[in-house]
Each structure stands twice: as C-alpha cells, then as structure tokens.
Image 1 (cartoon, rainbow, N blue to C red):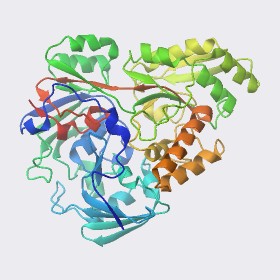
Image 2: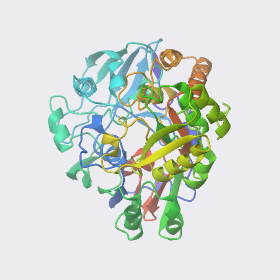
Image 3: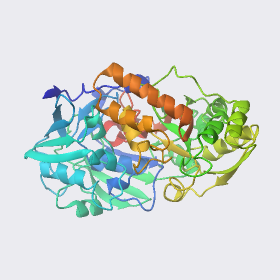
Image 4: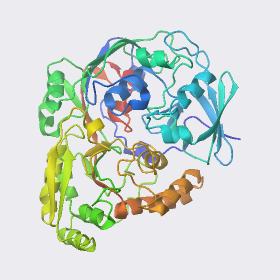
Length: 517
C-alpha cells in the first residue's frame, strides 16, 4: 500500500486561482465569540437535511459547512485534508483505499462515530429509489469493509486516483448508522454547529458545539444564523442596513453601492464557477451535432463577460474544466462569435433557419435572463431565432433544469477533472444535464474511464485535454463564461487571507473559517 498524506494528495492547480484578500486579518488573530448572520440565496421550501438532495448554497453551507462533516475536505488553498478521516492509503492500482477514522468524535445526539456510520452513510446513496447526485461516486465502490471500529476499506470497480477528493463532495455527509431517518429529520451530524431551529426555505440557526475535535483550528462563532434571501436586491439591502453580516452573489450592477459603504468589503475569488446553457442531446433538434455547433458559434461570449459579469470573469470555451483545474486546456483554440460559421453548420444540418425556446430565470445565475436575451440578439444574425421563456424562480431547479430541452444553468465546477466529468458528463448520471452519452461520443466515455484510473500525470493531461476538445467541438453545453465568486461581508466579520474557490462563501464553510473582528 502507498501512504498518501492528507494535504499532499494530488494537490491541484486550484490554489493558483485563489485571490488573497489583501489587508484582511490572518487566521492567527481568530478569536471565539459572536454571532454570524448571513443572507444566502439558493434556498427552497423543499430543503431538508437529506444531503442527497442538496444542490445550492443555502443547504451546502448549512449542512457540510456547519452541522455535518465529510470524510475529507478541500481546503481554502485547494489542497485536500482529512475531516472525519485522518489519513488514507491506496493500493498501487488505486482500486483499494483504506481510510483511518478520527477517534473520540460524537454525533450531536451523543452517538460515537465509527466505521459503521461511514458504511451506512455511503450506502444511502445507492439505495433503491434514492435520488442522489453522488450516486455515481458511491456506485463505483464494489466492496465496503469494516477493518476495525475506526478503519474502513473501500474497493472500487476500477482505479481512481482522485477518489479521496470525491469523498469531500457535499452530498456525502456522515450520518449515524441506524438513526439516519432521525438525523435527516432533525439535522444530527458531527459538525461544529448543532441545529437550534430550521425552517426550510426560510432560516437556519445553529449553536457552537463545545469540546469539538476542531477546537483551536475552526469554529469561532458562538452561533450562526442563515437567512434565506433569494432576491438579489433584498439580499443587498439586508447587508446595507445591518440585518445580515454577509451575503453571496452580489449584483454586479449595484456593486458600486456596496463598495461606497465603508462598513462593507467585497470578496472576489477566481475559481471554476461557470454560467451555461445546456441542451438535451437526445431531443431534436439538439440531437444533431451540427445544430449544437451552430449554437456555439452564434453566441458572443466576450459581450456576455462585459455586460453580464461586468468583467468579473473570463470567456468560456464549452468545457467545464476551468482555470482553477490542474489540467485546464488553456491553449485550446477558442470558439468565437461567427454568424457565418453558425449558418454553415445550420446548412450542414439541412436547415436554412432555426426556431428554438430557451428557458431562463435569474435563479439559474444572476443576469441569466439578460444573458439569454443577448444570446437571442447575437444568434439572430445567424438565422437562429431564440424565443426566451422567462421561467419562475421558485421551482426552477425542479421544474426546468434537466427537463426543458434548452435552459440557463450554473455550476460551481469541481476540484478535479474526473469529479466534474463524473458528476455531469458520464453517461446515465443523475446530473447529466445534456444527457451526453455514448451515442454522442463513445470516445469521450472511454477516455473518462481511462483517465480516472491513470496515475501518470502527463498521460492524464493528454486524456483530459482530448476530452475538453471533444466537448468544445461536439458537446451539448454552451459555456460562454467563467464567473468569479463575488460576495460582500461586513467589516466586523474577519476571514483568513485565502478564501476558498470551490464553492461560494469560502467553499460554504464561512461558519468554520471566519470570525468576529
């Protein structure tokens, strides 16, 4: 077996994408006390503590960021560390992984944490009828073996060099074995904060757990309160008037108002957040690769970065692997706005013009409706008539995404290439929002399996570059831009110099990592 250090495992290029917030306190100055109030988007009345269903920031920050723990954790600098696992080792072919578990940890109801909880928490993702975005991660495990009270061995169907990273997925939280229904009902985890009250789609309040295994390293607030504020203007007003201390996803159009307030500072972090327009490749006319190519050349990407992001991001190239990934294909030829090429591909599809609907809501991303209308205007020059359907924000992710043939969407990206591809591009996975599969590209699906098991860095780079090229040319996602995470924080709240770029709000872990200044 090969021992792999907690922090040294496959450190990606993600750290290079993190912007240090200059002038802010360092962690050495952190102190205990106070209450963090955050106004967060991404809340729904259907929210619950069932991590299999989590899809947006409110529950990510409430669950993995506060009440529950995972086996591993992506640190703010992009490296991987242990959370409930202290260390791990892999067989030479990366098929068998042995995890040593942290001892002396208890759930909020007093139950001791151990190997049985790990196995039960993993198995819940592959139960019959379970709907979990982490299903493809767990389904790859062919055997789960308890080696002792604080050691588990997981055997995979094929080698996966990124496997410990995958176990940091915010869906894969640790629940108490034999009490999972109760834990889902009441929010019982091993995290630094214990639930005081929870109103789905409204509010979550939690208090700091005493004598926690992270004492001295994290968890500085005595209490946290997360308030669901999906409306962008209301979120900004809540911060400006002191009702909350931090907000996510600021509106770039009103950024100047926040910057003018001396009591507030802006955090801007470069990562892999991507704004996309996925189309179902198994539904006409998007099942024709030439139609997809026409749509790729019919969008003015730079215009979207300039007008929607107001410069807070960069142009995308129809692949989800971004500037914070280790194997980002930065030198791949850029697909640019070219109405003549779009017309050419329409003719290749046997069409003189194209009439399609594009569903959009600002629930997808801030400015999504405006972005759809910009797309409409640029595509018209290529003979593509886009009818923008403005969908209600409430229920967008359950009624539109994965259901309507062409819509607006956003992704946070993932720390590794395989994690991203396995979540959204592997054939048959729940969150494959283009239904991209072997009928579209058998080569892509073969490379996905090959790259997952490959341990040689140079060979992995070649594989992932080719996969990005395939998606750019033939894929079902139009990905015009990568957007920086831009959020706002009251000056009375402090944070470390480096803020995580995997998810919003310091990877959703501001409850653990920030403190009252």
